Length: 347
Image (cartoon, rainbow, N blue to C red):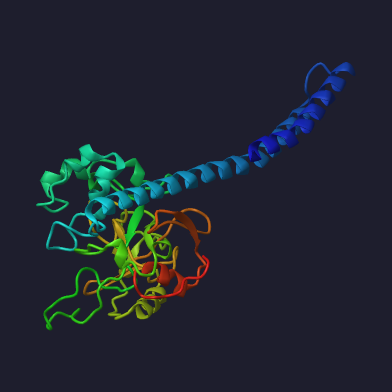
């Protein structure tokens, strides 16, 4: 519609130009002079300059719609999985290591017309075991936002992923340790929908499915710790925060251009891996801000997109909303918890 309107507004100028050319020819001009040619070129340049922004806006609108549709498919597959097993898939399953476990995305494959790919996944082995290479290296269109850029990620990493599962607002990566000698002993467990060995039932989401985010976008990384890309890199401040407020403070305090703060730049692949830089994110910092990781095993990666002004997110009820980047932190965090009892206002 925008393109049609712009073309309609340009049409009178084209008619005027044609009429002027005919008049000039009747007055004895057999060919264009240099000045006339330059005028024509200038007019064409102006028209192209007016047209390109509208074309780009239309393309981005189409990409954003496709991105929203992908999240909708993830939401439907999540509901079909829960209907079958009476629980949501685990955010990390198949390995004793948080880094090598298999993702929630792999569990949803049969419910998004990817049953053949699902048959290639062996949950008895880690995501990077050779037995899982055939699955790992395949690309799944539903996992890819067309607005993102994956040129920094080597194809050997495996299929890319734009949509991460919500682990909540508590910053512990994995399950709380049972040994008092562990530095993470006493840290609260994840309070989102997907995390290590999770098996959340819809009935346990007391905050309401429509008030809890299941999946959100995350920007692909540049693939190199020798390059600073604040929008996508996961940084390592080197501090030991114990809660979301401390993690956000420490994460925002660093200089993201300082390469010594680089943590993980290989963000967005492979989709089969359960990890904070491949398939899981946290509601600690607001969307489109910054992602950080803290030793030992404390995470504050956040959602982000290349859409202007916010991110697409799939809620627990399967609906997809565009959440603005300037959303208040308490509301963003409330959307990340499943049973904290917060009251979520309009967002």
